[in-house]
Length: 210
DNA sequence: CTCCCGATAT
DNA sequence: ATATCAGGAG
Picture 1 (spheres, rainbow, N blue to C red):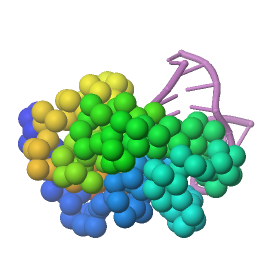
Picture 2: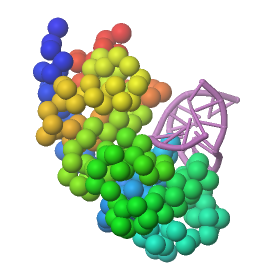
Picture 3: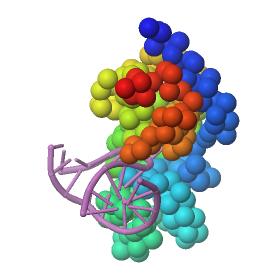
């Protein structure tokens, strides 16, 4: 049996060749736009989030804009991403807290980010990784599913998975690793009908061997 | 644990 | 018809 660490390195090597352009797909031009886009991305494809933010950011782009927006107007603009009432509340609430507690800037540390309504560890790690060069393992629905199938972890608890992966993935590969798994999840290791026959890492996968 | 929720693939 | 999509709050 291969050591988990060597298995991870091999998986990264293969997926890097398979997905050379793996990177964040949520369109944004600054930390605040990334925060809004990531809140909207809950249980929604990032493709749809980009369609919505493309229009949304034409009218509203800053925390100052969002604390003044009519909640009904915001709900209407983000309606197609689902959970639109909660997401509108979170975007407005986060904007308010950013202005009142954080001097108008998106926080650059985990503790402060987690105080924002609608922001959990997944969203916080996306922002820390991409806006502040503070690498984190982003554990989303794809990462939960794929790391369990591969046999890298044996739990559905996102926090346990995050810390477990921090142990077995080299820190300089954390951000890359999550993007590779997400690309892999979209193209091969889908939730419902995974393409194990053509999967490039099936040799390292417990699920594919069953 | 349940609830939030529209769009899309199967 | 139903499962799933870059989750988080209560």
